[in-house]
Structures are given as C-alpha cells and as structure tokens.
Image 1 (cartoon, rainbow, N blue to C red):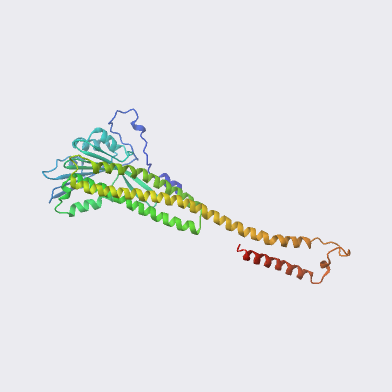
Image 2 (cartoon, rainbow, N blue to C red):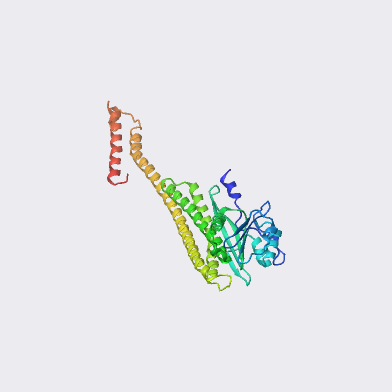
Length: 368
C-alpha cells in the first residue's frame, strides 16, 4: 500500500459536525470517525477489600448504585451509540450538554465543575508506527462522590495497568475516593504521551542521521509530516495544562486535599510534555535547515568537481584546437611542430604537464 493511501486511512483529527446543524442544544448525536459493533462496557464495583468486575457487560449492569463506602467505575469503550450513552448518563445524573460533548469527539480538552460531578475532556494519543502518524481519540471522564465514568472512542490498553493495580492493591484506601480514581485515569493518559514523544524522538534522531549522510527529497516530506504531527499534538496537549490547573485550584467538595497533591504533580508532568513538544518542534525546524544546508553543500561539491574538470579541459581544448588547424607546412610562417617526428609525443607531454600543473595549483590553494 502506498504512503498516500496509508495517510488517507488516518482518522480525521477534526470530525465533521454537519449532522448537528439545526438541532437543539443537548441533542445526542454521535460526531466522529465511523465505527461499527456494539459498545463494550466494563464495570468495577469495589470497596476497601472487595472487588467485583463485569467485562463486556450489558448496559443494565452499568446502572448500579455504589455500596456503602464503595466506588463504581464504569469504563465505556465506544461512544458511537447515543442510546447507550444516554441511558448511562441519565442514571448518574449527567447533564444533556455534557452528554452531547461526550458524543462529539472533536472537543477541546477542558474541565467543568457542577455541584454533583466534575466533567473532564482530554485526548488520548497513540503513535502508529505503520502509519508514521499520531492517532488521537477523545476520552471523557465524569466523576462524582462515589462513581467514575470514563468514555473512550475505542478499546485500548492504556488503562489496563490501572485496572491491574486496582485488582492487586488491597486495601484500596486511596481508591475509595472517586477523585483519586479519576486522577489515576488522567495520569495514565498523560504517561502515554511520553511514549508518543519517545517514538517521535527516535524518528527525529534517525532522520537527522540520514540527513547528514545522504539528504533526499523524501526526507523533506518526512520533516513536514513530523512538523504537522507535532503541531497537532501541541493543540491536543496545550489546553490540558489549563484544565489540570483548574482541577488543582478547584474548591469543589468532590476533590479532596490529598488528591490535590497528586494533581499538582500531574500538572508538572503536563508542563514537561509541553516543553518536550516545543523542543521537538524546534528540532524539526532545525532539521529543515540541516536538509537545506546538506543539499546546498552537496550541490557545491558537485559544482566544484565540474568546475575543476572544465578548468582542466579548457587548456587541453586550446592545445587540441591549435594543433588541429592542419595548415600547409610549406610556408615558413606555419607551425614547425607539425613536421617534427616526435610532435605527437610532445603534444601529450605538454597536455599532461598542463593537467599536473593545474592540479598542483588547486591543491596549493586548498581547493581540493
């Protein structure tokens, strides 16, 4: 499959919202990449010592009331079925406007606080080596006093380590606060940003080495592709800094003081991601300069070689032209060398001496 065809298969970063034109606010219409299949739901009900899991559960299993002192985490993988999102949202008291934002996958990362829950929108980024591009999906998080809802566009393994930690950590003292579980989900997504940056960094290093050794036109396309990916990643990560800052400074009763310490650390991680993205953007701009300099230097080397060859052959052409005029030797004013028995050998000796003299002159001037 050609590179152009592979790029066409990449999901659009800004889904079209033409289906929502003319509808009333809060209309539940899915806006995003076309998806098929049923929505996968995972339910985790736990207390300090007990844990019950439900994988690929029906919608009814997600409509539960947390036990006394317990927490419910419902992880919805797939938001392309508005009826499922509506039923779950209605049960946990999520406003229609927030449900609308969950179904519209082109939202800007942000945080909204209400009296009953906190609504968080952010992007999950993955680097696809086959496509050579960053894949993005929207993740929406709603957490209240005793429940956490996470909405993903598809099923991915980013949250698997968190689920494994939830199973092994007994007693689950920290996880008994829904805000800490929500923080852990956001932290897992931000940690995945570093994996994306690591993959981009490896591509930058490899591309820089290739540019120095042998610059090619295809590398220029790779530079522009990396520049576009980093710009897209910057647009996805930069608003997240403000959103996490709002969480850290929030006075909501749903966010405990113990969790704010972790959120402030998460804010520092976000700053680190942004700084790395900006550094890589500068490096990509530098790679463009390296490419242009390498191409220019290569062109200069080619021109230098051609110029030296032309310079060497100019006197040889002159000599060949002079002795190729074939004048009549009977006149005393014509070239006597044409009648010498060793005139041909003398001509080549003179030609070789001229070439050697020019090469010596070039080396003395350090031109070669």
